[in-house]
Length: 196
Image (cartoon, rainbow, N blue to C red; front, side, top):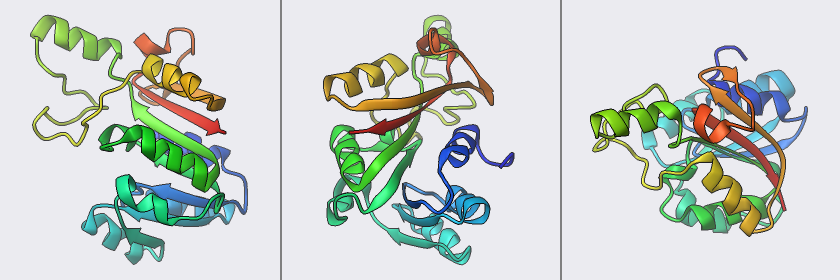
């Protein structure tokens, strides 16, 4: 699992053997392939980008082309043990509805996202007056798919307002864990395990 992006490694390490998983915005299927290999997980995926769908299917994975904003409504309630949304929430047109669908489809949901309140992002805005380009946000503002920037504290408030339970949360600075207490400032990425 060491080759996985740090947030994906956390998710892969916490999905139990034999679980049924839907990876929403699965990219080229890297996480799905690892889950299938290491934990015999029944993994399915949905991905918007046709090139990524082709790459995932070429790996022998069950992936369909679809849009998280519109196509999750086609899945039945509790069809999966886990629904995964890694680095995709901030790209959704209606992230609140996508999260509702995720928690309807899966008994639990993993959600990971870049933290726009990370201190390097703040410093870039303060000193340079420009949108940052960092390891977590590697492209310029005009190239990014991110349309809803959020912070760790925004997400914590969002789930609390909706009565969504947080079973676990991990906060990352690169590939290192950081404390929950200062996560809004110190974490580059966050991973939450949610349930209704």
